[in-house]
Length: 207
Image 1 (cartoon, helix red, strand yellow):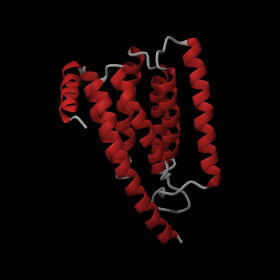
Image 2 (image 1 turned 60 degrees about the vertical axis):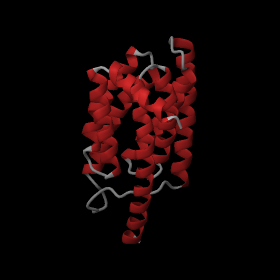
Image 3 (image 1 turned 90 degrees about the horizontal axis):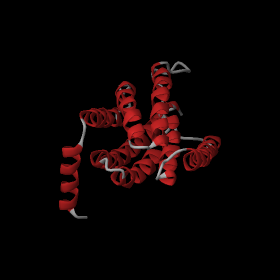
Image 4 (image 1 turned 45 degrees about the horizontal axis):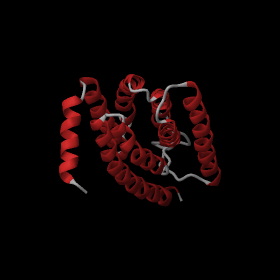
């Protein structure tokens, strides 16, 4: 990998970055960090970042991503509620794996949302990246839903989302946001390993 190219990209991104994008990036990274730690602050920090990205995505004609950020905001409220009110007498909502029904539901949610988003973007907007925008939005849609339910597999959805988002935002000229998603990919891998460990411990405790 060309480290000089990466450094030049970061410098260009910083030079062109608006103060709004800087704030969104800061709180976005904070949100992922808190998510790895299973800290409820994942939700308020994420809400700040997503609100800003709704405006940024509108400006850059990333309409599906604009919609998913609005969805993030609403799901953050839902997740905040679930995490703060655990059921079955447990001190907190436990980290668990999806069952077969949950996996099937996740796949259906992804495919259904991708098809709908692509049709809308390709036929009713001036988006020049309907395939990419629909894909990242559909995978993020599933990821946020699974995170609110504290499912380990949410990190797999985020890893896929982040990897595809890197070239998407780079193409749209949002250099710093592109590198943010590269960083998010690393954090998501760390998050996946951490939640796998936690789920195994929880299974032993509640067995």
